[in-house]
Image (cartoon, one colour):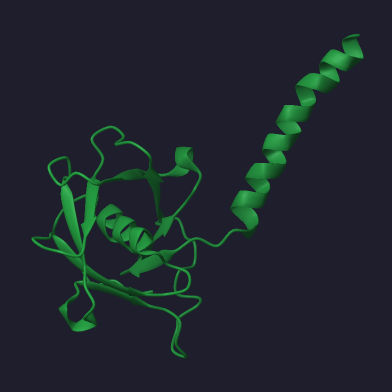
Length: 155
């Protein structure tokens, strides 16, 4: 009976270890390079330094992000499907900032209202197979902790 209890307690730990290793080692997440650091989306909630949330109610938002069809009008454009895509521009390093998308606002973190109409704190243009509009909005807002001033960013 004792062996069964030990086995029953070890199986969940092993399963969690296998899941965590697979998540960390083999999954590629959207990221952007900002100067000498990188900002990357992660699904590992506990490792993220910034937790952003989305809302459908503009009155609950702390940051408004407008989706634009014109890359010249955007503050942040993601186009990674062409020949010039920089596949290795987001190398993990000690200064990598991890961002996660939470279902609900966490500890006063940014709450994003994503819309195709203004007014907006940021305007984004996204044409990508790997980035969704939500990913791009989360990265650019999370990169600045919800602040409304933007630096140059690249893929």
